[in-house]
Image (cartoon, rainbow, N blue to C red; front, side, top):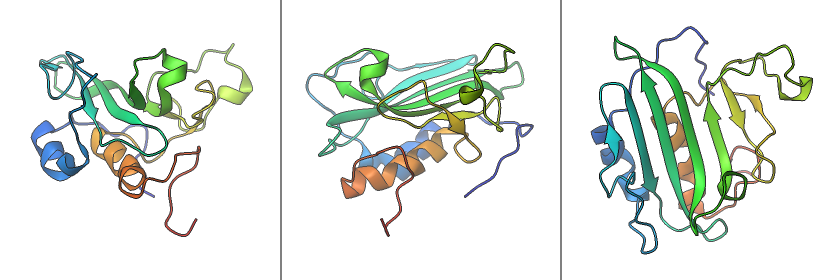
Amino acid sequence: MKYTDNDTLLLPADINEILEDFGSLLENHTGFKDRESIYGSYKRDRKSLLVIFPLKAHPVHGITGLRAYEKYDDKGYVTKHEYRWMIIVPKQGIQLHHITSWGNEPHDDPNTPQEYRVNSEPHHHHYDPVDRKNRCDNWDVRCLRDTFEFVKPYIESGEPYTGRRYTKTE
C-alpha cells in the first residue's frame, strides 16, 4: 500500500500518460455519448479537469467508466479531486451508478456522524457499492493513476468489486 500524507501537494493528471499506460482498459460504447468522455470533448483548462474514461464492459458491473474531477489552484496543484468508478450505461442517479469513489472534500463538520469520520480526513473512500454514504480511510488513492491502478485488476479479471480491494489470493 502506498502512503501519501495529507500535506503532500498533488499534481494534475497527465492524460497522455494515463492513455498510454491504461488505454488497453478503455472502450468506446454505443449508448454512451457523454460530452465529458475522453472520446468526446472533455473539459480541461488551467482551473480544472472533468472527464469520463469509458472502460471495457465488466461481466458483473456492466458498462462502467472512471469519472475524474480535479480543481487546480493558481500554482497548478490539485486542491480538490473526486475519482469515481461508476456504471455509465444505462445512465442512472448517483447512488444507483456508484461502484466506488475517492475524494478529498472535507467532512470535518462537528455535526458529521461518527460513522462517517475518517482518520485520513479530508481524503476518504466511498468503498461500499451498495451504500455510497459509507466511507473509510483513504491513504493510497490520491490521483487518477492510483484510481486506474485500483480498478485495473477488476476490469482485467472480471471479478466484481464488493467493497474490498482485489487480491489474486481471494
